[in-house]
Length: 225
Image (cartoon, rainbow, N blue to C red):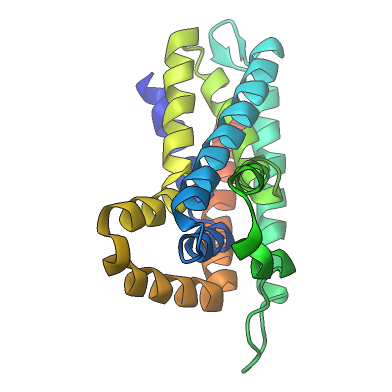
């Protein structure tokens, strides 16, 4: 189990470091419905990761992740492809960053968050955690890494739970701070929102480069073993 958890730790961190979802949850927490919408978004985020992770883990296990106790070659090839895609996403993120004094452009749906219901924000959390390209690739990689270890079903479930919990720390920490500190957290969260909105491209690029390099390194190590 330790091997499986160790394999998913950096991937979970990559999911957690998602600036725009953190900005979105901070905006929700500052709205009139913040007490319900913030936690609803977090629940949706957890559910999205858990459902997607479980589905990909079942698929990876069915595909035969090991041969005679050794990791199957297809897992290493999958990691290589995912690593290259993540690096391409990093290049695209950096090239589309705001230039010069241009203000960062946030998605249009963020301006309407004040009017959203808890059910709608829960759905948004699930979609952002499971469907966006970065998280989707990292979840696939995590499922393959867990299955590749050959651990028992219970141990694989624990490793996936660790991945999901770590992946929820990004939007989860603002929710916990808002609920625990109340109005005292407003200034802290506002500063966090401003910084993340301004540095979204830089943060995402660095995260994607590190994760992409790790996946490619793991793939090369697996293929050369």
